[in-house]
Amino acid sequence: MRVVAGEFGGRRLVAPSGTDTRPTSDRVRESLFSILGPLDGTQVLDVFAGSGALGIEAISRGAALAVAVERDRNAVRAIRANADALALGDRLRVVPRGWREALRAEAGAGTRFELVLVDPPYDLLPEILPDLGPAIARVLAPGGVVVLEHARGAMMGADGIPAIGVPEQTTRRYGATEITVMWTAGAGT
Image (cartoon, rainbow, N blue to C red; front, side, top):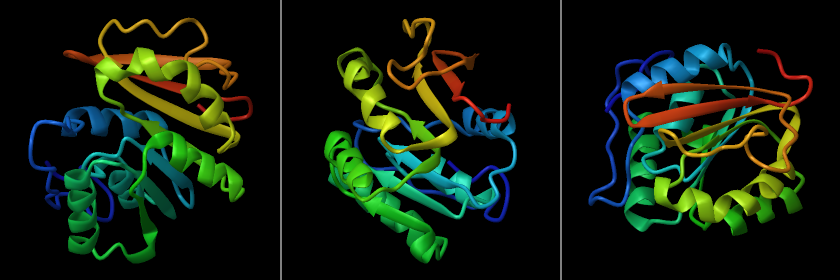
């Protein structure tokens, strides 16, 4: 696994040991960030961060800050190792908590993100989806973009993640994986 493009393009990343984490492939990350376009100065939230590859890719492509939310200890170690190897300093903040607690804390602090990346374990998605939308809505900046990585054919519904208010979305397929990009009101496409 490597950073696909930008400031750290080509640099290798470590993945957490074990089988609990499913890193997003280089091909999917490359396609996703081509859809998103320039990220100069954005604040990014990477929920279910795993290795931190999505947030690190965002930083490599110009994001000012990525906050990596991950509760698995092996994954947190991998994110920190990747951040240290790239000397990211305060450009990557690791939040070693569950997603509900982390998003509640970010909302309470008044933090808002222009880009929210969500890559949960695929089998967990139906269980968390009803609570995920309201939690993201509280931390999403006006005009923000939400990206959800999910299993191919997962039922998203016409409105993507409930309670975010998504007027426009696109879904792309990559083998068994799909990414759904949702633009909220005022976001560029």
